[in-house]
Amino acid sequence: MTATFVGMPAFPTAAKAALADTQLRRNLAHATGTIRTKRAGVVGEVDDWEELRLAGAAIKDRVLRHLPHYLEQLETSLQAAGATVHWARDADEANQIVVGIAQEHEAREVVKVKSMATQEIGLNEALEAAGIDAWETDLAELIVQLGDDLPSHILVPAIHRNRAEIREIFLREMGTAGRAAPEGLTDEPRQLAAAARAHLREKFLRAKVAVSGANFAVAETGTLTVVESEGNGRMCLTLPEVLVSVVGIEKVLPTFQDLDVMLQLLPRSSTGERMNPYTSTWSGVTPGDGPQEMHVVLLDNGRTNVLADEVGRQALRCIRCSACLNVCPVYERTGGHAYGSVYPGPIGAILTPMLRGVGHDAQTDSLPYASSLCGACFEVCPVRIDIPEVLVHLRSEVVDAHKAAPGLPSVQDMAMKAASWTLSSSARTGAAEKLSGLGGRLLNRFGGHGAPGGAPMLGALPGPASAWADSRDVPIPAPESFRAWWGRTDGGRRDAAPPGHAQGGPTQGGTAQGGTAQGGTAQGGTAQGGTAQGGTTQGGTTQGGTDGRGAGR
Image (cartoon, rainbow, N blue to C red):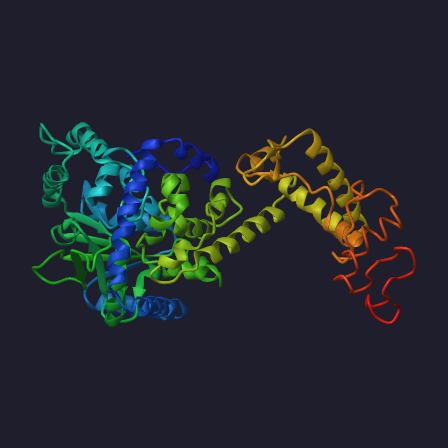
């Protein structure tokens, strides 16, 4: 597999290309719509769903507050059960550990399951560099691998493929990686699954070493958990002689009882099921049953940096359910590849920048802006991660990082500095408003176009502003500023027409038929008998004194 996220363009560029792929958009709309509907049905059956969400968030927050304690407890429990525990600060250390274990057992291939963390660290590439083949056994991951593709969804990595495309991949590529697809293979799901089963079975029976991830790791008992829908995971976890599990340090849970809450939240939020068809748990080594050598690699790879961020640390609650992807209007239209990371969608837009750090490359820095901030992701998150809050927080960090970077300021920075200089002075602000009003009157007369509803709008803007205007309607400046209107009308208490729009000429029995405009503020003061029924003049000083029909009459 040679496809890689390295060197991917910034999100706006990648998203524009994805939007032009009509087949991709149809595939995504169908798949995400189906999953959303299923999730809504099974969540609606649970009367205390919100209480479950609160419980899930509280469990994860307790872990994060006391993470060193629970990790040490997990290590002790795993070692007591016969497992070997390794600590990896970054991707390189984790890859060296796994490659070293495979080489120690003279393995020429490994089988893998539930391995999103290994995709994060680039384990397949590291194994390939060492001459070791790594075979994905999850059906969707197998499709991605055979197609020399990249995953585009946390739960359904091949969500961007339809059945016809999968059939073509199987017919074309299966024979190059092992058992070939049967002749006459159709795109009927049962036949596709049977072809994958036959292809993978010989790999399971032949492999000495397996690599897995884990959905959860229970500190109290040293139990790792994998949930899946196909059964391939259980084959991977039980048949090989050696099992290596790469587990992010945030996956730890304090007690087995906490697992109960998570196993109610995860399947409903991910696949729209009441429970996963296969839930596998294992604790260490059992003589004569399953792998006889077990290794657990506890992976940091930036997670402690995320933990140090008081706003962003809530992202470490994530249980990789993908519910946020399935409701996100941006993801549904662009797919996962546009995010340039193994973690796509709303959670990827916050997790990837925090793991990698901002201010280093344009692709990562673009991710916090890959959102409309509609909040749908928070509403469905089973552990209540406030993704919009973290997105806004990360946007500020991106801006600060670029401010601190050497070199010329960006066009946006210069525009903001100019705005700050103008708005910090009342005189400069007033002058800018007058120029804006003049420009607005000229544009209303000679340019612009009408938007729905009749509001006057500009067309395309020149220079650096063109990219901003490509996806936005830019209103023509108002002919009169609010400040000028307020001064002219005393906040609306005088019915004065704008300059050049007097209602009856200079005079018609007074300033303008008896006042500023036909009788004072509103033909007789505030309300026909308020200030004066004749305004400033209508043949005398007043025609009703202070209250119209009162003392002066």
